[in-house]
Length: 282
Ligand code: AMP
Image (cartoon, rainbow, N blue to C red; front, side, top):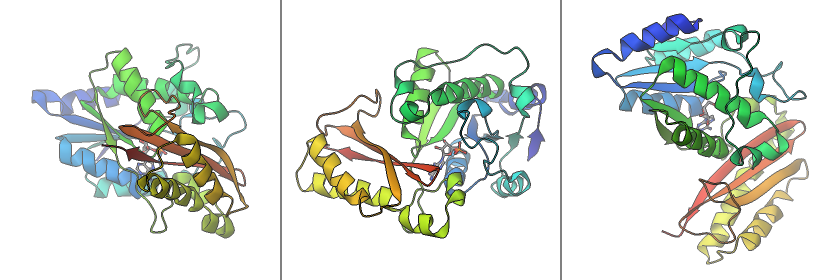
């Protein structure tokens, strides 16, 4: 695996990797890699001739009181893991490389960026779309691989790609979970043992909604009530949102129809975790 810290070197290596019509895949990450990230890498390996990954803890997607400084960083270990997965190119730029002095251009997907996590995290999705647009410009991948775990992010990136005519296919990969159902996340490392035991209630509440749905209830408000009931089983979990929305527009759905997204976010102490499932009438 070749590792690059500068845009110029990464750009040149990607251009070479794409030579002769090779399909290049990109897996953007913030590092502290786990099996969720690796599922993206493996899907990319299966679908592409060459795979690039990036590790960049992107400061612009963190709010002023969020965890940018303490976000887990394990660069050496991450490199070993990506090497084992036979990733071809790794881009790991410094903050100054990605955001030089005087940078004033932002990519914002209006509307969608204020929904779901965008409500509690103003500016978060603007940071995400800006850095992903920059990575697409640098790597020029044929395909970008993203986790369904971050369902709003996925919808917003798809919209950006459509609106700005990026020549990138966006590939969504399923949520990878711990054996007890907790969605894998680099932030799970923040949980103390008591919080870790409580955390799977987020997924349990989604499963409860799925169960009630399968029994024939299609009304969103009733389904949300059943999910909120489950959340109350764990007093240490503070619900941020539990919403039923269209997976493309992130607009509220009154009923489950075709494919509908059920998304949840909750706090365990100061750690904010998210999860989601899809329900479908098809
Ligand atoms: P992050 O490093 O948290 O920015 O995540 C990088 C990519 O990995 C994003 O596309 C995430 O959606 C994806 N990802 C993170 N956790 C999971 C998971 N548990 N299952 C599937 N994909 C994930």
